[in-house]
Image (cartoon, rainbow, N blue to C red; front, side, top):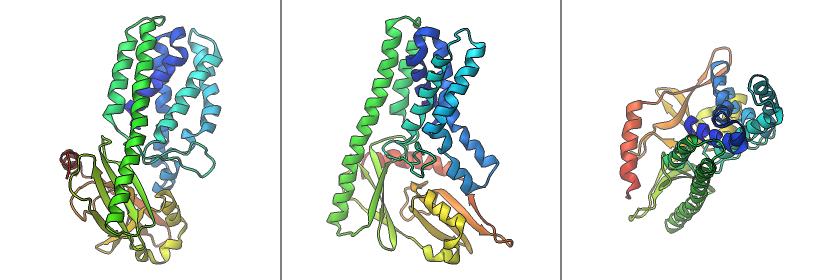
Length: 332
């Protein structure tokens, strides 16, 4: 999830663990702990694109990280805070660290909670930014801050925020299931034979859902809003894996395919090859758009090194997408 959401969740967890003992400092340290796992994004500044993608939401989002670093940071904080119980601080950091990847596991990218095992949890039932999850939670926490640490109302509003956000998360799982059934029905009605299907919510909401459908030679992309009245349609994108040639055997290309979980297409433009990660959809709702959210230029250098370079996103396209999304959410 986005940084604000993880700060709010971390602060709430800190309050639950140590709020009665240290007051707002529990929220402060919980908020800090809630952001620490995302420091793995710094890897993009010191390593290549493929390795950075592999690292993202890996070790720092694992149980191993929680177990190793919570006691260390708990000990460090106890050295300069007036509350000297290392166990209390370690427990705060442990739960703030652990709830971070547990929440991230509900997003499209997911987390490697059981690192070093090569198993990424990605339930794909909530977008990385969802105001309905975050804003009520934040409001409850801001109210709780104004009460004394021993106040029952402080605990009430903290738990209310946790209950509201968790309830919404549970509802998104139900909505995902309902949307999946609609996609499944549409494919059956249209006599489309497919290998597998993957669904996820569109940005900032859980009313409009997107589906990637794998067939023998193509991927079909479709969308469904709970307000739709017209039949569902799908846009076909050829896999084009043949464009890779011998590159498909290259170690770095294999790693990139593994990162995308096999949901990718290859496109060619002016003699250049691009790797399109389908899991995050498009920056446009226009039919047959090639403006994928995550698009990487594949280059083979004279020394044999293969590199992937993420292509920049157009902010104007992002603004247009938000407007188009709002219109699409209201139904086709």
